[in-house]
Image (cartoon, rainbow over all chains, first blue to last red; front, side):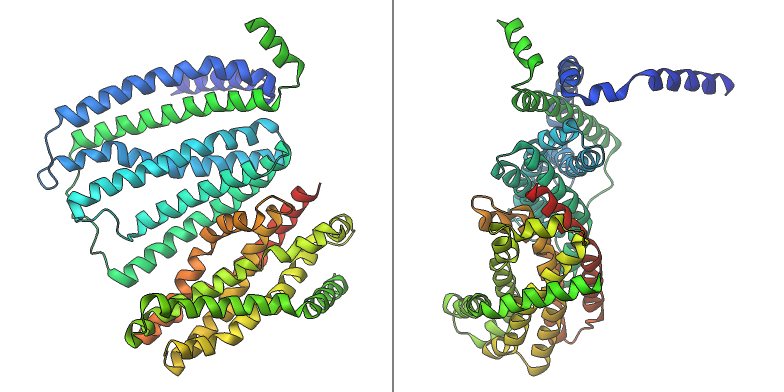
Length: 260
Length: 222
């Protein structure tokens, strides 16, 4: 016990020694992000390949839903990511507002397209799964409706960001929108849920059997792959964002000269 | 603080009353939208009766959306808004007065015209009254949330469409409980829960949105 505590103290000591604020500057974060990308992208690829092979070929079909259940290996991680990424956007927006750091608002901007893609993917795979299972592509189920509204909120965020010319105002305005939206997501979720139960009861919830351990572990694998992918892509996008916003800075022109 | 609130409110109301056409336009828009639906879905009385509350709510929602751009637009163009932002008075109070005046000139007329629309859709008298009550609680929430969108999109190209994209998702809970209360009352169910939730949303919006609008205005003005 004491040894664990000692290791913990030493480790935290080392972590505290790193000057984290150094990496709040776009110029020093840019190379760091470049170094970090392979560490997330390669494991994401490996885990996704393993998860896909296991999920699509190795695991047996579900005794109730047959082959169509296999969509959960994409669908569930995508749905999780779409919500987590919105909260992450709001988190970076809040950090950006408090410390007025440019990098955090760039992070929020970089997250939005990935979140929207995951959101769309969750809706699309859900529709494809709904047809064989429920007999229809779309029902106004609480979760589907919330997901759809979340997609609209991503679009709103990106549209506002794109409509404002001045990058500083764009970052701050869309950040505020992300924060207001994050407060509203739970309210929307619960109101939609209540609306749905009031109107049509739980007729559309699938009679889910307890998920087998093998399926759950493959799904977890895919969820981790989705996380790693999202981080890698966001870092890549934030690098582009940094170059775009800092294109008049000296270090960017040095970088360009080196590349030549 | 109360003095600046009162001054702002009377200024906004005076301006609103002098521009009667603006308020009337919103009102007529709501009536026209509500009148389009029977033409589109057919004049079946039973169908219209079930769809009525939802349609009237959507019409009111679209109408208040349409009027949002005017909330800060004119003051932004002539620089008055900038003076308000840099004045020593608390900006949330100024914002609150502006939103209240906006609701009084555009939201309240919608509430007052709604019994007529309810009649058009053949709602029972009591259901019509409940519709009026939900609109009375709901439309101020729309004005408050809409003010955030209006402040964020000040002076942008295509601001009007952009506002809709930003605030319509936020309007969803209000729409759900507003329309559901009337439906449930018609079905003989209890509607206390709906009113409690609408009331809770109104209180939360009253407390939180003036600050959000104030910071959005600061972002847009600087």
